[in-house]
Image: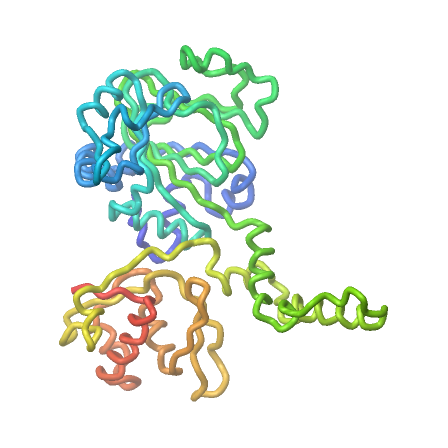
Length: 400
């Protein structure tokens, strides 16, 4: 598939083809499911069985990431993990025994431990502007793992290997008979979609749509990519937070005041709440909060812990750790250059604008290229000073 670190949304176009991104956003996003067939190898660079084995072997102390389910019931963790003592740990032999008997294995937040999936999640976060997490699911027998259910987020299914049958029932299951599902894995009748996903296929399931997936007595592996779209409640909380430090928030309500004073108080409340809101309230929310996306931790050791912050010379590269929003980009040439990043307002010297313009492309930029691009505007020493400012604030990462 297209490199998820690409600068455009071509990666999403590849996932959704033949449906265009604009058509998806207009007709499917938040509304209805979409099945996109693809070449068998188009997700092969994301994760293989060999890589999954390595991940499981390296994270066997993180029992919270492992989940085994069989016919809608989570298996007791003590049957495959040592939970007592100083450090919980997974028992691989018992995990495999459960899987051989028909259980489904899921591994939580695999995007936190596998680079290609980290990059894919970051692209989804950057485009959809909502918190993103990727889980992996593996099954072997013809028994379903999770029961018929609905999710509280937008879901993208990427089929990596094997086949799996997916059934979608819409936003209500009133009248759907689920009695046989617990004992036989026979899916209920009345599905709006009943399709077998092959390697390379993608299935989008909107929030609240009931669904169940059933393996087909062969090894099957898929990713579930969940996007937690910001909602009205998030915006209302932001409105409250932005006035929490106002003098009005700490003052007593005029319980015994007369009508005129109460009207003045009401006018002041409206001024504080709505006085500096933009016409595009949604965009202002994103700019001021960074949405509900939690910044992924970034380390640039050993350099970031030294007084100089950066490596010597110019044989290193820098990249932005996320999406930045320029707040002020005009006015006095001596005025500050303001950015919003992860809900924080940051002020820098005006010359920082030239640095940000060079590295705001989603990929790493070599220091030598920066020096060359900014020749005549900034010397190398000033570039290093400005990069150090960005590094101190967690806006960039450094690699050699």
